[in-house]
Length: 113
Length: 115
Image 1 (cartoon, each protein chain N blue to C red):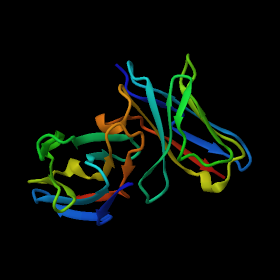
Image 2 (image 1 turned 90 degrees about the vertical axis):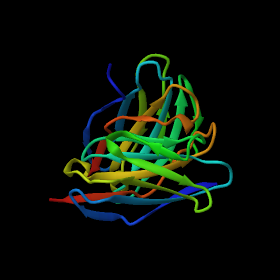
Image 3 (image 1 turned 60 degrees about the vertical axis):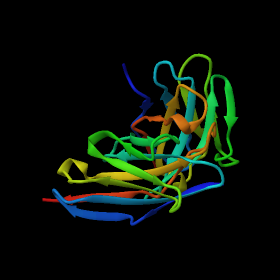
Image 4 (image 1 turned 90 degrees about the horizontal axis):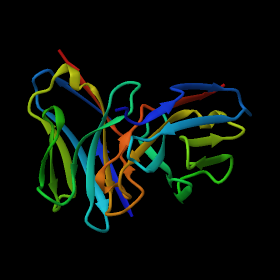
């Protein structure tokens, strides 16, 4: 069984501030972890993914995430928020050769000017 | 090079009608996945298909829902006798390889409204 929990359905930051979106996972075997971003009325775009290589993963638009096995976490960060980062962010987990990618409920990020 | 194409973008159906949602995967992708997103919820896996085969339909409701991916043409998600609870965004994703560890490419979704 596998699942993810995203802490905080809404996060609000000021432009230029640190962005931290939290994701904890549960998996009985080594997980593959993903962050996706969804802009209004659009599909999901892959931000980054962890597939058992480096624990610190860099993605597009300046985002990165760190896989911490001891904490079963895969939090998403960005040093300085931009207005264009306002969107919904989804954490997802799967296992090797598994057809079923499980998504969290999402975190809506608001960026204030 | 188009990504995953879904149509229509918006679909309105009256209760009891049928809804047909179409998905054309990315060029070179032969694996298709359908997900449903209910308001204020994450995406729920519905079904995984390859050409002419349903591989995993563990997330599909047992009644009224069906999916296909014919040898030619797009994948179709079909909902018969729609009810208000079917109102949701339906996303299709595709991948080149089997298994979701490579990550998926998603379409823009079809937003179904049942009135």
